[in-house]
Length: 152
Image 1 (cartoon, rainbow, N blue to C red):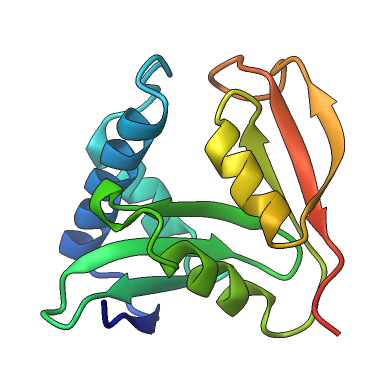
Image 2 (cartoon, rainbow, N blue to C red; image 1 turned 30 degrees about the vertical axis):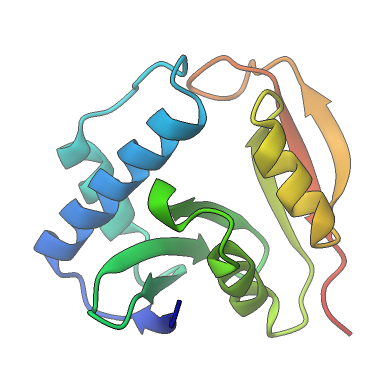
């Protein structure tokens, strides 16, 4: 599959609604038991608010269809979501490598029960540095903080 990565620089409300829909579909497919905390409109508003402090990169197919996105800043990868139909095709790897391209170390949180996501991050060199019972996340689910040393 041909994939194009593009940096999102303008706050397009329609596009952010599509990102929010993809976010919801990915979370539901990965962890159907996870409680829904926000409406798609609230998620779209939140994601739009990430600009300009964070970079948002999109993965698109040859027909310009949205396959996934990543949100990151100088220290953290805050979100990585792929359309379920795009899983296990190397797209997530491309997006994470885009976030790491500046060579800086990055951290992220992942739900412990999302074992495939944890394995994915570990395969890219992220190391678990902290586990919690979930007291600090909205879902109150056990999570793990991963750190990547950066690319040298």
